Image (cartoon, rainbow, N blue to C red; front, side, top):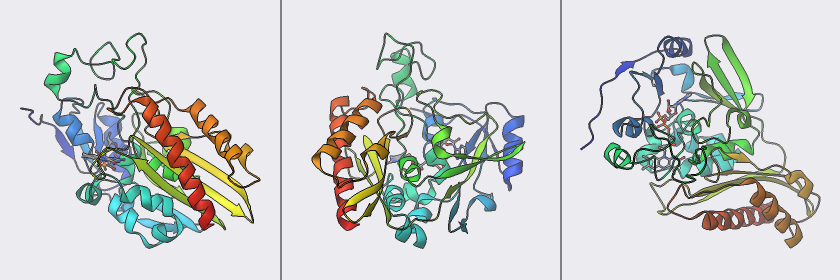
Length: 326
Ligand SMILES: Cc1cc2nc3c(=O)[nH]c(=O)nc-3n(C[C@H](O)[C@H](O)[C@H](O)COP(=O)(O)OP(=O)(O)OC[C@H]3O[C@@H](n4cnc5c(N)ncnc54)[C@H](O)[C@@H]3O)c2cc1C
């Protein structure tokens, strides 16, 4: 049986207070909805002496208009995001991503910030303490070997959050708060392809909000994912597409992925495929771009080859549907 270890809970009411506690208490962790952090604490994967509960910070709970777009507080829940009137009408891919995460109960408490900072996942890591101990742990936590690629010294746990790719095709930015103030960076810049150090936030930094630009004319987005069960399951692979169609031509094309690497991946080079309709040559060009940039490994129960095929299939059908409706 697994027992919950003891920890202290801090309950700040402002962002400034939260980051001050984080800076003063090494090893502490932010707690948002807790749907990822609490299972990891219970399994002995992490053992923070203090958790900093973000639920009481009113300034992080709002969705506001900003320069024609939206500023979404990091403690906004997935249900609030998916049901927000402007998100449902102007940012359809974001609504689809948020509305398909886990199950309704998780979405009532799980948050935008928690989803963007979600720990990377692996079949050798997301296990009970006794299972991991019996297997000498793994490189990501307490062990020396990555069982996915035992000859190397790199962790291949996969990033599996659904929101990041949906935000990326919108060109979202994040407000990162610390004791020194707030910096605003593109969302794509806070990740790196490393299963252990997947987040480029400094220890005392937190995401305070996400900014999405005003929807531009004719730019449409969609999100689709593959998972073993149709609810309460992480994506094996998830695809976000944003495109603009003018007459017969696609004039803007953006693709971002989750579940394929240790970070959400904004596919590079898609601008070279615009200027015409989504014919077979263009779609094959996109298949090739994606195939080169993704690196699914044996970190899930579904093999890498399956996840490669599913990404290509989901991307094609999203593009064709968005083009047809455009
Ligand atoms: C059965 C089950 C199914 C799931 N299915 C899915 C799924 O389909 N898709 C999916 O994406 N997720 C899934 N999840 C994971 C999780 O429920 C969601 O990702 C959720 O959005 C996490 O948000 P949270 O607020 O609960 O995060 P928490 O657990 O509170 O936090 C997660 C991590 O983010 C950090 N953090 C939280 N907020 C901030 C912040 N503002 N700044 C910096 N760091 C922060 C925490 O310290 C922690 O390390 C599932 C979980 C379960 C248990």
